Image (cartoon, rainbow, N blue to C red; front, top):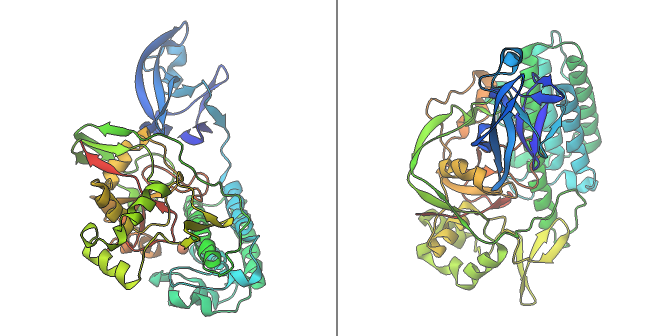
Length: 477
Ligand SMILES: [Fe+2]
């Protein structure tokens, strides 16, 4: 079961206990970062004294919406410290892994469905992969990490596909160079869809046959891997269409993002905090282990920087003022002659930007997006402020709304103390990229459902602009 408030999963467990129609969640299944102890107590004649917690999400509080019995009477001993919910918290059944698998496979195809066949194969920039490649690579992942490794006598669907659709796993053999993904016209898009259908059916069959814990774990990783590619698909489709001279529209279900909050600064006191993942449920290896960090007192803004604010930076010659930029960044903006965020075009005296609805005038109140770390840091410098570190962001995250855009932090992507990468090919998933990249926290409007959490560590090269990135500012108190 899942407990959900404000579209956020606050507890998740297959082992709830139902008492008087309420689902009581095991104490280790609730996401502590969303809860604050309350002074409220009530009494039940047969269960004993109930204590309450207030739920805090994105700066909004649901007072005393969770309760538990820390010292229940004998008849209620089985729910000791288990947590139940009311007051608008929805309790929904968890889809099982087989359902999640099928839904994930389908969503990738739904996302690509509005594309024309020509859109599937081009690679207009080295870091933009053709949609056809994403569809095949996510299938390759299931085939080569699960079927090939764990099904006795399994014959590969096509023995050339390991070379064509391996991304960066040296343990799995040689691969097509990343920059050459757009040179391949074969296999065709139709053949890739056939490949998807065949492997989806084989994995679904495997899941129906009481698979081992190891296979279940790999399917879960495969689902999360495909969800990451779904977001990359959104970036890459936008780049493919947004760099066409005709600025075509892309039909999709993404919401447009706006910012309606007035600016406030959230104060976080000095202290020792914990960051990183230590819950039940899925996380990537780079989110562990949970560990202590010391933070000086700081303040963080409740809202993201807007297009209007960024336009003022441009107007003030921000892109021409060397002392606002890191050395590497200054060289980059000059070499590439950058003077605005990616997709911004100055036409008829006004800034426009490419959106999935075509070229539109910028909305000054919407969060600015498609900035590199270089631009985010230069903007912060111009404001006399700074970017938060990833630890500051994670500690402060229950107090503001996040999830519209990935937020650049001022933290290099490095292993947490005690980080251990897995043996073999899965060890290549994250650990080997912990060099020369910066961390982004949060999620974006294109992040698949249930794929976001405050401990998530996204990471990109400091010059990356085609990602759905934005800026939140911080300052010393
Ligand atoms: Fe991948």
